[in-house]
Image 1: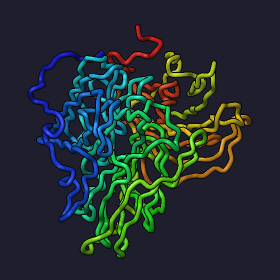
Image 2: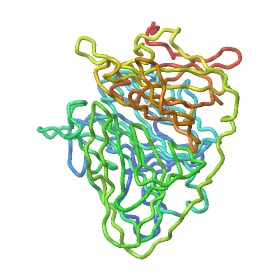
Image 3: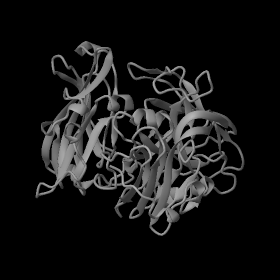
Image 4: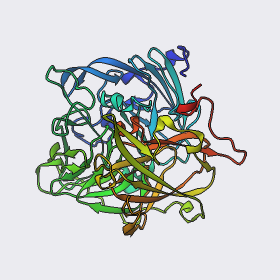
Length: 505
């Protein structure tokens, strides 16, 4: 349960008054006109620590320049404050729950401890309670884009939908390279939502994809600018609950230099960028030399049950004096050494779903999260490398109610995808095998129906209990989540309070 008390409150401020507060314009490194602010309030660490008070409050919030009732937000802000830290920093967050249901915090993609007062998703902060987080960021933590949001089981989706999510940046990484360091940066937070006929923020799951609005940094179709020929560094995160994005910038390409918070070791160029829920990319965008306005578009995506329509997301004005163009080599770094380690354990996980008494149920290996026992907990040994296969049996051909893709996400450690292909859940036959030449690490990967993904992952630094799950938050809240324990040579793993749902007492 949460830690109560107001100790240390005088040293912690909210909103723009937090330690190390600075403008988005400064973070973007703008030289001259940086355009509109791209990510709302930005709070940055100072002298090795970022102390922030986040109060989850229900009330009326400014959304797209309009006062909108019915949201629950951190400090009354939509989007939530962007947090910027450095490797080796301490992130101290005083979370105040003024909402109506229990909540907590998850630091998505961060390589930090899953125990104690850090990235511990088993914490429950009840209404009216306060919890003090103290996240110790390792000195060698990758620099890149992450995000934070509630991870309280059964209510993660409604809470993120209502406004409780924000960007988290670890400095360094690709952005610190000499050829990129001086570029203007854009933080771009993508999320969905909408307003009902009474002018209130719509209830969770009530809007169809056609009715759902897609917000860029809390705005509908905002404007940004770029100079002719200028290269900018964009860090784009999907911090919503369900939307799949297939992004395209008119007449331009993206050069990918960062994935899920880590620099890639082989860059690539692409005309489109695919972001399932929870996904992030860092890309270079070089403007054409011709002045004018181009648009960042959602091309639309068929997730199976949900068909996301095409939309205009943002207008990019190309204007002003010519800017500096930058290119990067394809060889951008080195893959992690553990990729060549012997495989200590191979595992296969199967995602599926059904409808029982009119209610959707979602499973991993046939078990819902609420029914997990110790026999269902994966135990991995600290310092080992494992290979996991994630299979998706959510299809009509296998007897399921829908064809659905699932974005698989694991906490604590990244992974490297090495193979993908088709898989028939009825015959167990594999086809269309594609062996992948790895170019980056990830913490979220999309798995189409009747398909599989194989990845390798290394459990390097922390012991404790954490989770893996589908990042379609409705699926996670309704069962598609599992538990793993990282244990040391003495068998020590799960920390105090990290109980299974079936062992709460």
